[in-house]
Image (cartoon, rainbow, N blue to C red; front, side):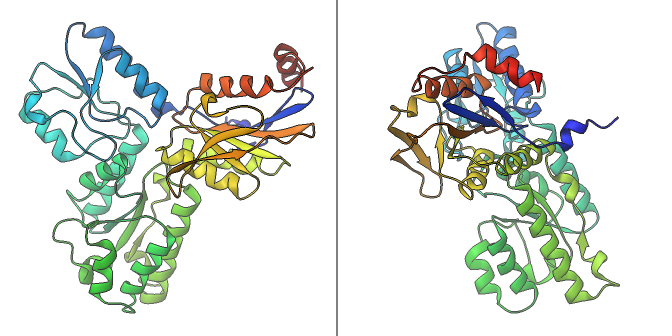
Length: 384
């Protein structure tokens, strides 16, 4: 039977009296992240005395990555592919963990050439692999793969690498770039305009004149699911108008099944909580976390929103340090209203531990007197 709770995106209200928290139905760790962390700690336990490496950050959360490093794991690269450990330094008996984002075919082949076995500790999220499988199928059916993602993100780099093994592939980041690509398909702009934007985001040998006649859209699984769907719908409509209803299906492949259920549920739950009145939102997660940044975007549409990595960013009841994702800079703001009851949306990204969110809540509670005890609030919530 289908779980009806999956269809219910109404939030949980934790009423502490002078402060009330609205908690989305879905937030925090997803299956892919939990699985990756579990495999990483198993690798540590099973290989005492061996050198253990991670290709890059396991997930985009500083606390999780710092804990892995404290247990002796060394990162080979940063999130943008810049090398910390040269490939020549690796030996065949080293343990190399592939992170949840996956990795490129080129790196897989390089590790194999060194005799390093990676399958046992490959933590690639199953939903990322699902995108790779769908891309492969598109290639076999002679479609070009359009990847909705951030071209320098580890997951998108991995998906692009796997995709172009069997299909012409291109990365675009948003609807404005989709429309630019559409303008080329409709002969409204030329190859020079196309190359100015996409030259470093197309597969080797990509020929825009012939490779954009049959397309399918897949995504970096942490992008806004609604935006991916809108981009897919745009290309479907474009092909319909260009080739007519009888031929449009031959020029566009429906790929909505590549959307990650966990990302979609978290985003739907964020929409659900934002239907309720709130004074502000606190979003907890790593500052380089794509899925967290999109939750921030959704919250910012409705109320003042503060993106923090942990409770340490909350200076006191007057000031908070928070990350501005578009400008990639920290800011300091006055944040907590003085008139109770204060209503706060509290949520986190898919790579943020629940314990971090709990510490944020506890710190905020410390600024209020005569709050209802946590045990009673939880009991009241469960009774509803």
